[in-house]
Image 1 (cartoon, one colour):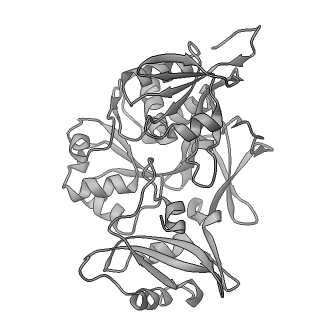
Image 2 (image 1 turned 90 degrees about the vertical axis):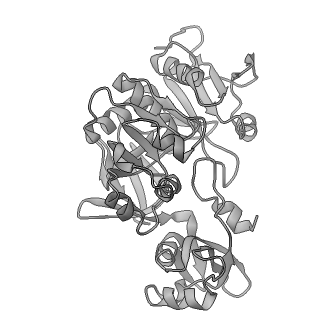
Image 3 (image 1 turned 180 degrees about the horizontal axis):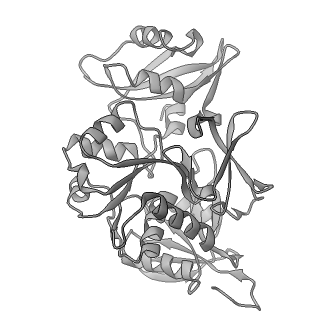
Length: 383
């Protein structure tokens, strides 16, 4: 491991590199302790994170240059920049021990056969893509790394295992990819729209749904059940809490969010028959007319409407109701989009009346963040 008694902090090198062997080698060296800690960043989206997280060094395709930032604690191997959708990016500091504990537990749960190759088609600057590389290192295999998601390339990759977000799985389904060619498809990052999992599994896909975050070294709950040594609890306000060896060691330039061994997430959930059910994000709760509406619950209902291809639900300021429930819909048939009245009636048959959308916005596609999640911040502001 990294040792320098005269300099207890470890340098932090920002890797502003495209996905590929050079990036993978730098991450491997950071985990082995043979190199500096790393902050992997997409070359297309590095500016805000570089300004907020101030690395010690910056590596690009042109080489390494010094920067003015301080180091990180000596046991930190990787810093992951959060999406920053609600403000300046945070730097989630993860030790090699936490990342390896997560990867080892994942491989055990999946009963992954030795020699199985992983495909990385998610950005390594996000924890889901990073963990594909860590699993490969731990399994002693060379990862297949794509610089972007391309359905045809994924289908022809020959990989045994792949980690996807629902949008990517949907695009593979649209192109008729042979999903049964993968021994495992880990699916996380967002809730899958109704019917997607069933259709994919009917097509031969072996899917394991995951829940987690950068603060938990990636997915720490598989198909509703926590990985080895991970504990779950629900706080009184409904927020999901996580404990175990996979937790972050702290935030760069911020206080540690771990209290008494527990990390409290921003997600609402319930544990039913021993399995975790994620209800939505606490900060996506819409206060309308004195009632609280979980946006994700409304979206999951509207997604079942036959004239809806994709949907997100957000709250927007309203002079009378405080916030209005807004449905942002991609129509199944652009020539015959659903009306607000149809969606309100459909919702009111299945949810309390106050949860029905009061506004409808039609789009040809939902905006996405680089990690494949819906850009809810852009939808709230109408950008």
